[in-house]
Image 1 (tube, one colour):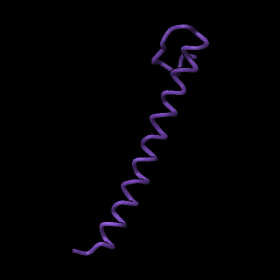
Image 2 (tube, helix red, strand yellow):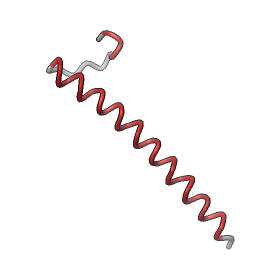
Image 3 (tube, helix red, strand yellow):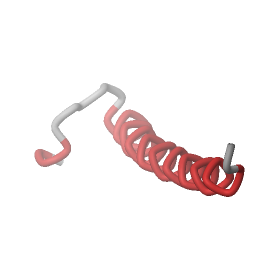
Length: 48
């Protein structure tokens, strides 16, 4: 077993997971801000 490949895959998957988590957090923050201002969930950001 080549552990250098496992380690590089681990770091690649870790970075990918952090990026996906950051994108989801940005969407969640946007919806939270919209709800805080308008007091209802608006899924169409382009209308604001």
